[in-house]
Image 1 (cartoon, rainbow, N blue to C red):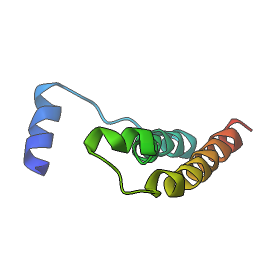
Image 2: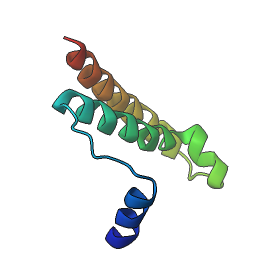
Image 3: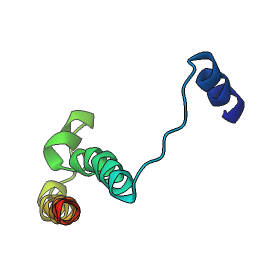
Length: 78
């Protein structure tokens, strides 16, 4: 995989860029947000019927994770 990615980088003439810690954390939070959102019961129903009570169990935990991501992102603005 590394060789393929290196070849792509070279073929596309991409240059490495330095990233601040703030930008790296923001990028990670954005990526995590997608996974957290997929844990919501409404999203999971797309994959089939959920066991009884699973959506009620997940909803507050998903909200807690989303709030944590929001707090992290707010702290980066300071």
